[in-house]
Length: 563
Image (cartoon, rainbow, N blue to C red; front, side):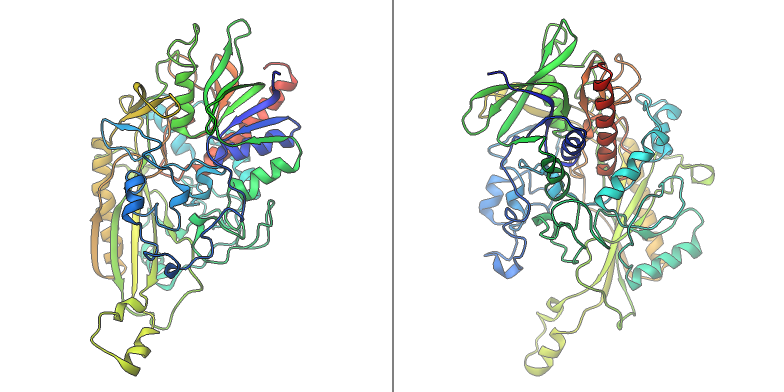
């Protein structure tokens, strides 16, 4: 029997959850497909309450895990024993690298919405206009005013805390009260205000509920546990599992199907529309087809583009929507792992509540007009950082025992502070992904090959990132200031994007200003693949806003019978 729906959503992560919620709430019978396993809010968070001593290796990744997740573990922080189950097995899900690329993934209901860093910043017209002004890549087909109401909508629904500070390069939003800054961070904030006219320090804007509740499954205020990547039993940070998917389910319009590997969008040459999708059941290897009036690809930048590449027809011999030849090109990420560290003297009488899951933010201050212009590089970067006090481990190696040792163990240690820069990567056409049909996975599908790297612009930016971090810490009076550059390859930021970019025509881009494929208007791509440039801000909030906007457009067009 032919299985038909009003809409099909591919993926259950950040954008997929939002697509499901919006389409279902607008009355569409919606099939939501996830290639991985089911993860139910709270009951499928096995490590959410475990302490370090509850793990055989103290939450340090084991050699056994490393054998299965060698690439997932290259970040140095993702695959701890407490979170490894939310990252893929590299031996089961291989990919290929011409140049180093860290494709960090979670195949399960909720995707990386369970794993993200929760930093939530708006893009501005500095970002939307940059390509056009500099003659780089193609122009965004939208501007800030087009997406601003949708930023409002998303922020109010998910819960984002922070301060409004009136910067044009970092638009204000609808925020809950921020977490408190620590004493050394206030010292740095005051020093920056005294010594600079081009930059400010503010509270990080993060998708945590800090007051009241938000819609979803019992979403409540953050308990400052800082165990977010394990899944939050309080629903305090935004995830699809606690927020948007339950909202979609509550309508009665959602059919959720895990273990469904989508590999092709079906196309009708006569109607010039997509008719549905083809999947492989990950458990049985059976092939199924499902049909719908509109399709939302929200599987992630790499996965959604892979699906389009595999969706070949007489009309689209090189992949659906690929008249421009840009499908798979222009891979971007945010380069980071560079900054400064220091010790802070004083504030021995100051401490903080719990384990704050955030820190401070220094928004972009380069190339935004006037004296901020740089000769060495285009675009800019921001800093994310935080301070803390040492723990009992500081005295663990002391040659002491007895009463004195015990007293020292319960004293908080010295304050330290660190900052990490996140910079924009330009959209280079030659940075690309493609499919290798000679190397297939266990379901017979081609594997992805990455050929991408940062270039001279990013390298020049990194020098400034390091220098400015040192300078700000030094002027603040911090001690033993040292800089670091831990090296970077694309993908490590887990912000891969740009592989099916938005643009103004099908000759130079894949999607239009409504996230539709130019010549297949009932297919929408609203994840990172759609990004025309990267900005330097964490992109998830933009994905969510674009998705909500596109879903509204799709329903209106459906009512007009344009799809």
